[in-house]
Image (cartoon, rainbow, N blue to C red):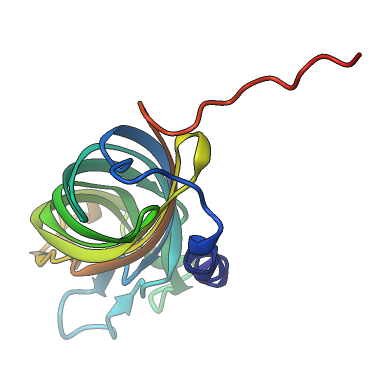
Length: 242
């Protein structure tokens, strides 16, 4: 996934000389779809038989893809572009570690899954070609995650928790405007989350274990394709055959 996004980002830059657009054409509303690589996903830790008992079991973190939608508005004056954008993405897959329980048959496990990410951001860009600009962006981001724990020693066996956080988000990228109002964007975003929760004697595990959840800083590398309303070259059907 990371290699695919990297190749796509390079393709955006190399295509700058071949795209077609008119000066000032970054103006307007747009909507689009996002494909993203997510780095440093949420993590979970199970302290079987409490802190100081068995060695802690960590879910670990894994780079996962995410997909989403976005929309926004740009206003261009001369070579400068200002705008606002909002997006929402949903995560895929989870990070999980499982081992045999020391106290008898059964499995202990800890898992974490990123459920969603969203932002509302301002953007400031500079169009160094009529159809290409670099930009910086900053705003507010939020995230939601689900955490699951299994303790084979306990009758109830499984505990699930949800956690969310809101924090600053910032980054930058490159945007390329094609004919027919298509916009290709490659960008990096950093979500400055910092939420760790420790639950002693987790009631869902009959008080037999402690658990901890972490929704920390997240980095994303995203590629998106959007349609911009208004301006640009409109598609025309080919002439009929004679």
